[in-house]
Amino acid sequence: MSTSVVERTWPERLRNNVSDVLTLVKRNLRRYERIPQLLVFSTIQPVMFLLLFNYVFGGAIGATTGTGNYIEFLLPGILMQVALFGSTATSVGLADDLSKGMVDRFRSLPIARSAVLAGRTGADLLRNTFVVLLMVAVGMVLGFRFQGGFAYGAGAMLLVLFFGYAFSWISATIGLTVHDPETVQVASFIWIFPLVFASGAFVPVATMPGWLQPFAEHQPVTVTVNAVRSMMLEGAPGDLGQALIWIAGILIVFISLAVWAYKRSA
Amino acid sequence: MDAITAEGVSKRFGDVQALDDVSLSIPEGRIYALLGPNGAGKTTLIKIMTTLLRPDAGHVEVGGLDVVSRAAEVREIIGLAGQFAAVDDHLTGRENLEMVARLYHLSRRQAQHQVQQIIDRLDLTQAADRTGRTYSGGMRRRLDLGASFITAPRILFLDEPTTGLDPHGRAELWSVIRELTGGGTTLLLTTQNLEEAEELADRIAIIDRGKLIADGTAGELKDRVGGSVLEFRIAATDGRLQRAADVTADLFVKSPTVEAGINRICGSVESSTNALTEVVRRLDREQIPIADIRLRKPSLNEVFLTLTGNVAEER
Image 1 (tube, each protein chain N blue to C red):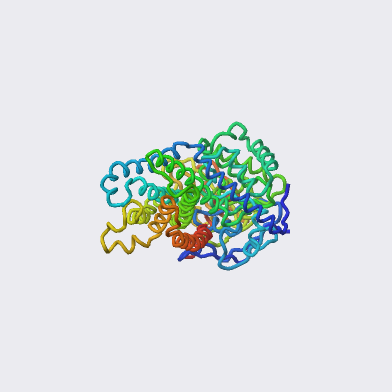
Image 2: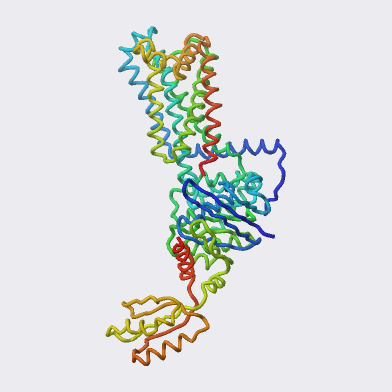
């Protein structure tokens, strides 16, 4: 059987692109099917965070949050943490593919340059969806309720996932620039920790020192977690507009950077 | 028609000139080996030909298509097995091949059919449904080779296909390569192994420090070095080896190698001289007994050392 070179029409190209991305998403998810422990342990960690924060710090922090119940304040923050920590999987996965020669194989195939990246970030989005739903379920066991109604609750979860997806592209750019999977893991936490902890995810920004507040107030995690909270608890969009601007900005910049880094990673 | 042509290809990475004005052409259906030491530029050339890298200068056509301006079309007609066996540890052998088949846009049924055929031809039936992590080095190589051949591409590139394999695994892979390319596929493979080049290829190009320094069949390359190799062992054990070397020195093109341990002297001579009879005459005069003596063509190994050695001396 020989393949002849033909000009492809654009609907055909679109269909091929979609099928390529799905093939690669499936490939990336197989990993969790083959090593279920990976998913189990990577979900135990955020559950532990949720329990620790709620029962250990809840008493002390709860008083400053203005809500009667710390879990109401905490769960949106934990969801953000899950989305951000989850996005590091993107860089590790890509660095692994690079160092094992998988990327060279993909690059020699008749698929779009962006398909490998879309397949990777897409798989991580699905994994994040699973973890976010699980965390919401655990949160509800601990007393969390969607006081803003179902539609806003679902919208808030979508916002968290969308946020995590945008950060997957930052992570992809890092993975493609650093190459070595272990270094990538270490490098990721350098920028993720300050973003998660110097934010309104776990404590009100007003309790932080004055010099830190301007950063904490406006950085994407705080803006987004504020929107998530007001949607989940009050049924109002709150900072949603600002959060979407952050997410769109990150996507525009880092999709271009990631594709650029992918092209020169041969 | 030529399946692959390269003209004046150059590529530089920082201070390193990876390829320097490389030109070659490979007729359709031929097996061509690119032979050179580590860091000679073999992988860079393969990466340019398979659209993974762009050349700084020069022009490459694969299947009549320019690899820069028509890269997407080139990727449809080639197969590549890179230096690392690209096997996903978490997928089974079959899933690995099916993924690649689907990415070549075969329908699900076509893909399954094609994959089964490849599995049978590669003799991987037993292991097909085990995950990649359980595969031995040789099996990973075979699977990787199968992936590059899934659509029976017209033009196949193999970058050091047997590196890291033991002699048995290497011989096994050679037969797989011969079997896959038997149907008229053009194959360009790189290797550091002379035996591999001689075993598989119709033609061999020797590359060193980014330059193509010789090109031809194994026989032509041997002729190019010129002359023959004369080697003899003396039966004397009383240290007359040096004496034997001294009296025959002028017969060799350059001073011969003297191996004291096995009493052997070996070096190249002009083909048309009567060096052999002259050695016998002179040693007889010195009353040094000869254990054995022969005149032979240089081995490819000697060709390689002579050619790459010369380049090194010019610097």
